[in-house]
Image 1 (tube, rainbow, N blue to C red):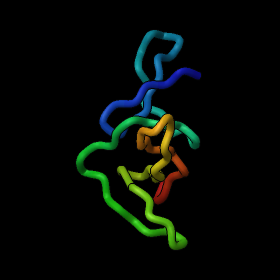
Image 2: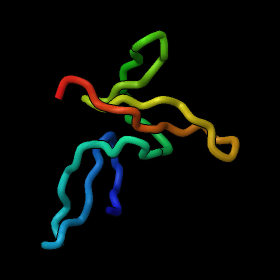
Image 3: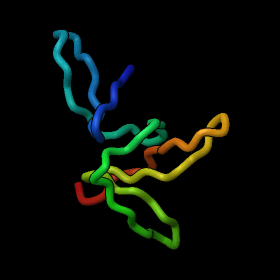
Image 4: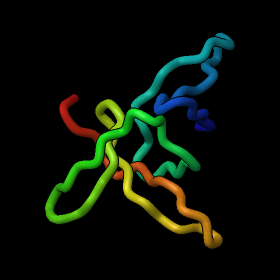
Length: 74
């Protein structure tokens, strides 16, 4: 499934041509987080929380990016 990301929300274009919000796909990598993210520490690891989605920092081709590692509180 091809998905899109904007301002902390993941969505896709369904068969009816409508955009539909989806749960963040684990492993998805995005270039930025919205300004209202929260920093949390879970099991000694610093993660970034946007609504219910948790991200970790990864470096790809020398550039910091953010990878979805899971969700909390759903």
